[in-house]
Image 1 (cartoon, helix red, strand yellow):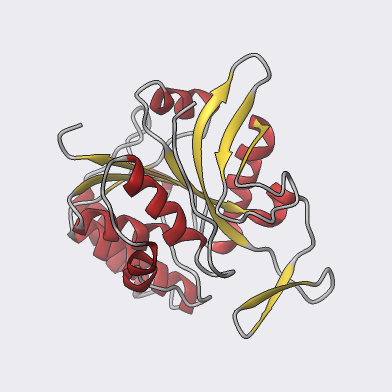
Image 2 (image 1 turned 90 degrees about the horizontal axis):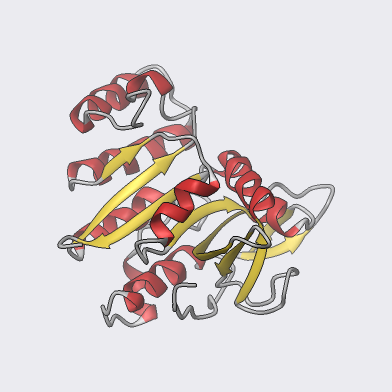
Length: 239
């Protein structure tokens, strides 16, 4: 298990910056949590998006790779089939062309965030999500920030927001996105170690727990409903 310390998020919309702050601390970058929260861009929902977290990390001198699964934003044919890599300039061209035809507010907002991220030198990849991919990074002592569906992961009610506060509502609510940090794998029990900024989570009511790899991967994929479904790999540039 990677020795990583995560704070409890101060409100229902700051899981992303709080998870990013944990990554920074792991690599020895001493930034105040409030400063990170203040400077990370917000999404239309009030939270944030993976490319916005990636942009913040790039501006602080890190190397960032985003593994994406959202086919509303990215087409699989834009990526190499074997390695999942792409010409990053081609991705910018494709995203700009796509926005001329897909004008949904959420798609445009997310696309612009990815364009900003790419412009700063961030990399986007498309790979089949697997336990082995996670383990490859854990073996290098690299924690993984991931955007997923909290509704699926927690098996909780859907949610709606009132004045930035999440309220469980199984009728009027919608699926809720969330960011956590993955920091290890238990081979014997096939469990992934999770550092979760939401301390009151129904899995453990603690910031740390282990969860089935199948459940976690499904939660990541279902995150496509909230423009999540990604892995964010942040490393020092000399790594």
